[in-house]
Image (cartoon, rainbow, N blue to C red; front, side, top):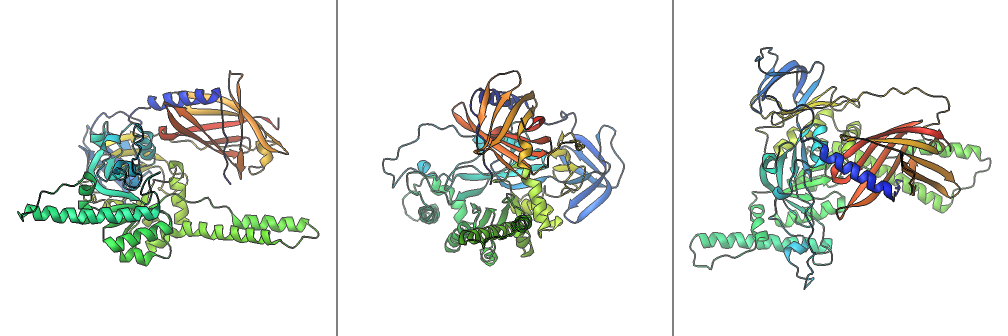
Length: 577
């Protein structure tokens, strides 16, 4: 079970200020500055679309477009050369649903509803007229985080409650929101999420309110048509929220309905069946057993790239057998022990279903796309590999990142595959995209090139006295840490001790005598995790730390809320002290 470490005191302020400063020091573009709009990429294997490839190919880019892809070697002398020998080129990945690039809206004084049963639309979280334009920023770290993984486009929807607003297709590049938006307001985003303290505050209330809004929009559209025909009726007067839903009831705009569990998906499908809107089931984590209902609704499906943690049930079973062998006279399992064992088995079966979910949908004929809304960026490709290991094919996985979302979002004519005349949205990797050692070397977004350094794999020699990775005793002692940011490194140490009461420890900074107490320390099978919440300009920022411990060394990342993730490494200074 994952627990947390809470860090309080001067170190919080020091780390927070340092990481904030480092975040703002990051350039808008990664890697090389833009020096030309003509590029020649040579020597690579180009996967033009899932299942289609060209060996030893050349790609010519000019004015943000792919001018040529094939085996020709004719290259203009003024083109910038990118030698991609033995590398792999794919169409830039497309994130079908996320909040990438959105800044947090400024919170004014919360409106007090005079009548909680009839609040304003804003107070109730009903603002389908909202656009992401005012909250979109190329400086948000979520933009660069996705780009570093090869994503070039994201369908970005606003955050909120029942009806947060409309989604736009966003390029993960540019100097302003205007430059980033490829297609504006192409969807309506909705959730079964009630308002706090006012109506609709429950799921049932949200469903009832959704029906009311939908019927009001139908009446508004009919009234407007009659008025336009000169039918002698009074001039229509409707609020913005009602009018914003007219394209939905006219089937011109789909509703991307967030429904990541079975119960939510059943409810959304019931609404769709009753009202008849175009449905895109979004950030879906569970849909087993209702594929036929999805098919009957003619719904598209966006699968969440988030997966539950799966513990090795077989390993636990073997460990239990070993424990029983050591006990000469094992007692009969108690009722509670049997119940616990059955619960663990059900959890394992559920986890397996989650792993097989994407493959099962694809096998049923759904052209699935993927959402990054609920997943940490560092887990995206490891989770995708798990899906492929559990039934999803490699071509289906690639289609879910390229051709399928391009078709779903209506942008297949100019992106989603690699061919002449399409936008120069490309990702170049040193190995096939699902290889565990694959790293992104270059990303092109609308013809702009970003170059990334290859992280050399650390070769660690086994030292005498190294404890096993999974042994809890191995983390007792003093550890150094170094947090890497564009502005430099922050170094320090933390000490861990184990007693009959559990784990305890302190953390401090090099050159500073102050130490802060640690609590709720978690270490499981080589993974040490902790986080803390700190205040920054009146906003609560959660800093999460995930470490993978290997003997006396570790590496991982520090996630600083909307500012992104920073690499952290360290080693044991003194064991068991």
